[in-house]
Length: 169
Image (cartoon, rainbow, N blue to C red; front, top):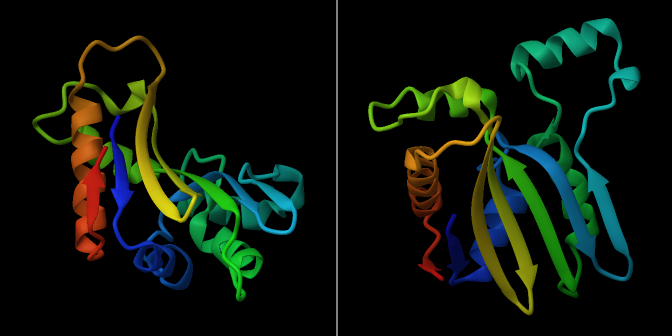
């Protein structure tokens, strides 16, 4: 687990809310505090979808239970946009099953993909600063830390690739 403080908040907000850069991530939760606090639960509700729509979702994101950031982003943008900055927000993003498989398949990884429950990127905005915190969860106790190291490196590279400067805390 690492905490990365983004140096220029505006650049991060643009990448997160105005571009497609984070669209492949899955959303567990988004909490946005402006004039009220808005909670978005990213868990998919099976009953809402037709069988055809559900089959399409499962094909696009196999074994997922969360909505994509692509679907949630416009709602978050509507809550945040305006002349005033939000008091705070938190977005909990997950790597897709395909990304977990990719990380687990690297030679440096000593953990099978089926043991990785989630790879998480928490994005928090408070007091004018954006902090990105990585995390991981497993289906069983795992002593091997290679997944955490690979996920941390992936997130650093991902943010750098977006041109976002950050400091590790």
